[in-house]
Length: 544
Image (cartoon, rainbow, N blue to C red):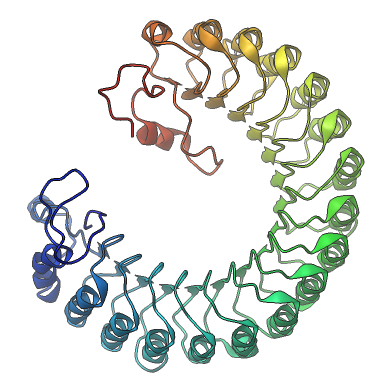
């Protein structure tokens, strides 16, 4: 993999003022070896050593050159080498200033190369001519490419039509990313008309295209007759209620879609109700994402009721975050979901659940419905609501991850969470960033940590813990052999406290990612042995 650094041909200095080779010069040795198939993957130690000795430029079967302005000239050289290479399976060239001329050269090698599986051309300036050439190669010659990333380019209407026509005959391309391209409604209309005849595509990503409700109607009609696509991402497309209704009609008939992401589309209450009615008859969709659509109480309750009354067992992932739900709506939604045992990931973040909604949530959790990941961040839950959640979680045996950052636990609520941790035996991930815990609340949670045997990750960042709170958490951690990582960033913890903690499981920087999909052990590699807030240990250290 070529190191990511910018610069044009002729620019020989890096950001630190040190000499760096020009981008095209960096390619020369790699290109020779690509052409001669000199780099072969294998298990023999000497062969691996030979690969690593080449300055990390390439490690087959992947060639990755990103954020390096090699432009069309460099893309041409790579394409000429790839025309004879039979080893590399992944070629990643994002943000390399590739335009139409470079894309035409890429198409030329695709016509003869039959080993490449993944091609990433995201973030370039490929327009109609280049994208049409690539589509032609995939239609007439190439039978190996499985994933094509063309997001954030300059594709226009003719390009969309050419790609749609290509997919009518290509049987190997299964994943296509066309996010954020300036194709207008007519272009997407032309592409949508070809969908019923697509032969192999399974995943279509079309975020940020502003296709509107009319194009959504055509797309819906085509999806009713398509039998290959199982995943569609179409966020930020201004579907509105009518577009949401159109997609709901597709769900009533389509039997292959398993993932549908309609976030940020303004489908409103009406669209939410129509989607709910579709869920009564759909038996294949497993993942539905409706974030930031303002379905509000009416739409959310309709969705929950439809799922339960129809005995829907296919939906396992439901995202209703940022939808303007109030306390009453959250209560009714959770009551409606009572009895459902299929939903495993429930997203209700950034609504207005409040303590009354937390009461319903506590009752819902106490019945052990099977939810494993729960997101209730920023919902206006106070200490009283934490008491209700504690009561539910003390009986719950299924929840593994709980995200409730941005609520107001304070000391009393922290006491409830600490008590919950003394009895709960399934929770492994707890996110309480910015919950106004304070050092007294930290003492309460530390007591729970000292006896808990299942929690692996805890985030108490931005809670004004101070040195007293950090010391309390350190004491609790001394009695706990199971917790892998405790994040305490942005808590006014001083260098003297850092020196006295003596446990590399305590992290004083904010995590780069608190998403539940990140494996706990992987976070250790991401964050290093010990992280500190900038300046905590002096100014001579570099924080990664």
